[in-house]
Image (cartoon, rainbow, N blue to C red; front, side, top):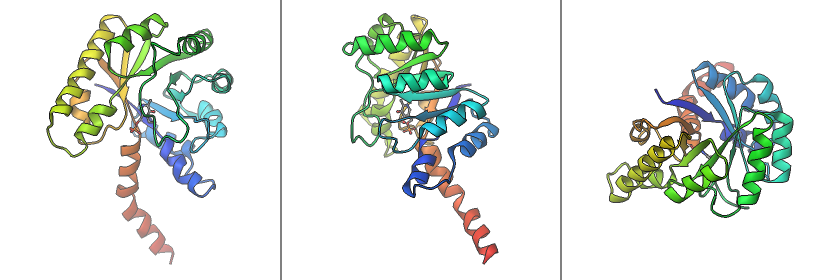
Length: 240
Ligand code: PXP
């Protein structure tokens, strides 16, 4: 069985749309865990557009499975990771103004910042995962930087399968993820994957034996808004 870490950033996005106190990602994390999720993921962005420092501090106390914080390899973020001590930090590239993470870390460049972050985090017993594109050069570079865990970026596959049609790009992107996962596994790297996965395209990725865990956020939160809407309206009507 492939493990699932639920990314709850967009619960915080709804809260921050009103700068208020609900929905609370802490409650969301507990619900995900009660439903059987194997981990909780949040992305603490430099611009704090959704998840806040307060959230990661409380999640550290409340998450009972595995707390994974995605962050850029900046001095500020590494400081917060060392204060909070999550089970795992996923290092991701972060571009100002981007809607979501747009690509994997460039492990063949930026080596100093990444190596230094890995060393600081690992020496504090925090597992480090590198979010990388499914390319041989990135896997070899991640390995040389000291990574023991990687998360393969499935964005190309997700984009190509969004319309639910079989396309050449989708087939090629899936093959690239599979090939990268097998190469990394052969080097004893723990392989995770995610980005843009949906209820319709997840099966083929989950069927890759080398991938042990998927990190899925937006599509689960999007579905929860719709499957929960009828009940929410009925509960309001009952009050009126
Ligand atoms: N993995 C990483 C590194 C991400 O940045 C994200 C998005 O925050 C995800 C996985 C999850 O992507 P999605 O929200 O599209 O499922």
